[in-house]
Image (tube, rainbow, N blue to C red; front, side, top):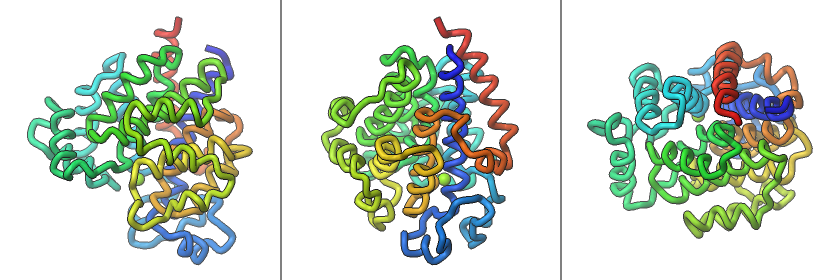
Length: 318
Ligand SMILES: [Mg+2]
């Protein structure tokens, strides 16, 4: 692997965690509330208001999104490949600890009897009980790492993303939006190929024809068009995907992109995880401002996991 590829993979890890930890500052706020609390915009961890929701975390800590990203990482390190049962076990261990910020869908699925033996069946059942309506963002918030794993083999990236998404999220909009993001990242890493909207729509259409319009809208230069704080759609997987793609198509650099997404409010930690990991792949770890990196209170954990992961990835790189 080249130095540039390593820098971009590290950018995915840090972009994910930074988006999460900084995005917590505006999570579940409307855009109006964001401008009330942060009149000049949220630009640093130190500004994060300590209301009932946010004060559960220390400033600079990430939330469930990155906890679950690291569950995928750990399952890869333990198993030396991507395996849904291994991931389900890691997720269950996390769930039995202190699963801060856990989303409703993940909670319901992981609570099902015999989840660790039949995670896909549990996810399918919970989805059917939602009358096939539930397409929340609990898979897309964690799966960006799968765009880096064996990124040189697109077929594997797709298969791995599908099976890890389906551990908790069965809806084709969830699976398709995860695959859009991981293939986008894999392409950037592989040959600095930048997929365009038409190519992304082609990928998405294999899963669900409702994904396409959320790809097309992300081309707009005006992020307000995405309506990320729309009250009835907070937590929707396609909103998170469009936030990530907006950053991909429009941001000039990491900082500009992540802050634009965060200051729109809505499910901002998840939106910024998706945007941050994509921006990290596009611009690389070295493009990320130091204050974002050093402000992560669990930076050492992330750095160690990244190093272990890269050692393993290098072994399978041909
Ligand atoms: Mg979260």
